[in-house]
Structures are given as structure tokens and as C-alpha cells.
Length: 332
Image (tube, one colour):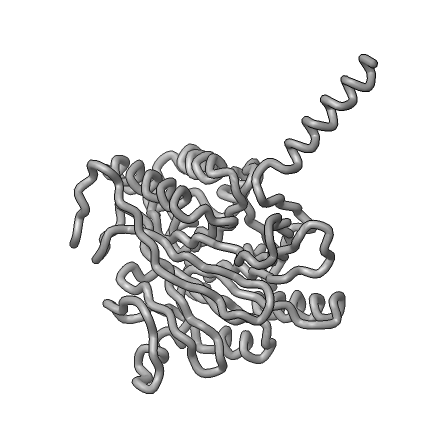
């Protein structure tokens, strides 16, 4: 009788651990992960995109604390399945680099849901670069950051499969790219596009069909500017500055159209843009919504809510904000 009671207790503990939260992360390889999403197939998977927090700016630690409060409030309001951090999580100044990164990892892990991270142009600056950040990140309980080997160096691009429990075929795929920081590398380059093509072809060969996909990166594509310039096209949200597409020459978007799986892209970088719209070729081009209190902004910080439905429904996109009780809103 004692043995059976003990076994029952063990089973209950194991069951409670497996059911803790609604999402489970598995690492398949250095550049490939999967997230198991529980719940009803009729409910879209919700992703909260946050971007450009610029943590660690000298003299603005109070702003960083407010940024964390805002994000926590957004989590309470929208309960996303996944968080996407699309670059410039850290300032280029980066004092106490390892401690700053460890603090950020601890905060996002404390939200107890999968979160993915792509490098921005400021993240590798300040004497604490990609590999050092990755070393700290590798201790994360919920965070996802992967890499593959490019032509000359390690590239922090990776693929995430979204699956339901017991299902072998992903119902969505998320591609995350490092859009670069250093001169000559401030865009997604050919070796990264080769990797993307290979992953897309591999998916089709394994599952005998294409899987719907979106992509995350920091620096916008040149087509974001084309979208604004073309008066025959429409967009939602705010456009208050030019598009700083840096070294992008249009090949990334053309490759996405050619492969046919990516339906929307989400970036950061430009603090005064938060718009989205469908460009020629059918892909939605979307900015995130500035999320850092320490960063100059034209509106109170917030995030982007992204809903990925199963079936043939359209992706849901909207800007979201949260107010902090007792904190006067700064408008610049």
C-alpha cells in the first residue's frame, strides 16, 4: 500500500511538471528548436514582440525598471504564448556586460514562457559581443538563441517549429536572423540566405509540403521604405521617420518571395515607426513597437501582438501599450 501511494505521488509530481505552463521548448540542434503549444487549435498562438529596450544606458537604470514593469503588465494583459525580442536589448555602452545580460535573461525567464532573441546592431558593442552573450544565454531556462556556421564566422540564425502535443508536423515556423552590426555586415547576407533556403527545402522534403512561416530580425528591409513610398499600397500604424535599412539591397525579400513560405516579417531598429502593410509579392512587412523607456520615443513604450491561426486565416497584428500606475507618461 505504501509503495502504491508513493508511486501515485511521483506520478502526480511528474504530471504537474509536464503540465506546468502551456509551452514546452526542445532543442533539436544548434540552429533548430521546437515549441510544443498546448491548448485548443481554434485559439491562435499569440506572440508578443518587444524591441529596442537599450538596457544599461548610463544614468537610466530607473527607466530600465519601468521597461520591465511595462512588459510584465503586457504579459498580464495579453498572456502571450511566446515573447520575441527583436534586437537592441542592450545599449552599446554595456557597462558590466555579463551582469547586465544575466539580469535580462533572469527577467525574461521569470515570465515563464518561451522567448526568442535576435541580435540588434547595438547588442554586440561595448566589449561584450555575440559569443559572450550566447554563453550567458545558454544558461537560460526559457530563452531561445541558436546559430549555424556561415562562410567566415558563426551566424546567429535559427529556426523554431511550433507543434501541438503528439503532432509531428509543425503548424507554423519562426525564422530568426541576425541582421548584423559591423560595417559590411549590416544586413542579412548571402550565406544566411543559403541557410534559410536549405532549411525551407528540408522542411518540404520531410513533411512533403510547405509550412507557414514568419521571420524576426532587427534591421528593416529596403522594401519597408518602398511600401511607404508606393501610394497605391496601404499600411496601418505610424511612420514618423525614414527607413534605416542600412546595407540591405532587396535580395532578402526577393528570396522570401521565391521560397514562398514566409508570410510576414517583424523588425525593430527605427524607433519612430510601428507600421505594417502587405508589399508586392504578398508578404506583410511589420515594425515592432518601441519597448524601452530609456529610448527616445514619440509615444509611451509598448509591444506588438501577433496572432498565428491554424488553418487558412490571416495573421493578426496590432500595437499594444500598457500604463504603469503612478508613472506619468513621457511624450517626446
